[in-house]
Length: 162
Image (cartoon, rainbow, N blue to C red; front, top):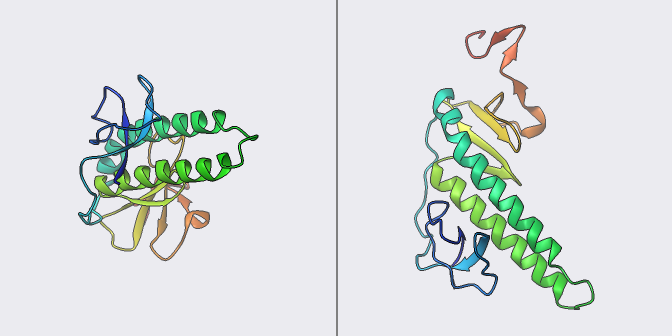
C-alpha cells in the first residue's frame, strides 16, 4: 500500500489518488496512491529569491496538512482502545507525505514544519518554519534550528554584510 496526501478534487497539492476510508469532500486526505515514491530527490541549491518563491507553495501545503492533522485529532475517540494507535499511524502517515512533498521541491525537511533550503554557499542553509512569510533566518550546515541567525545583521541584510 502506498500512502499519499491529496485534497479531494485538487490533485495539484500532491499528485496521488484517493481510495481512503477517510474521504471527505474538500478535505486533505491520507490515501492510497497509485505511484510509489522510489525516486531520490537531490537537494537543490536555492538562491534566497528562489527559496522565497517556494514559500507560498510550502505554506499552502503545510496549512492543509495542519488542518488535516486537526481533523484527525478531533475525530479521535478516547473510548476506543485502538483509537490511539490509529491516531499515531494516521499522524505519521500525514507527516511522512508532507516530508516527501518537501523533498520533491528539492528542500530538506528538518522537523515538523521546519524546512532548510541549500544556499549557493555550501556551508549555509536558508531556514524556514511554520507561519513565516519568507526566509528570514539561516544557519550553517553543521548547526541546527536552535542556532539559526537572522538575515538582518546590524540593519544590513546577510549575506551582503559578510
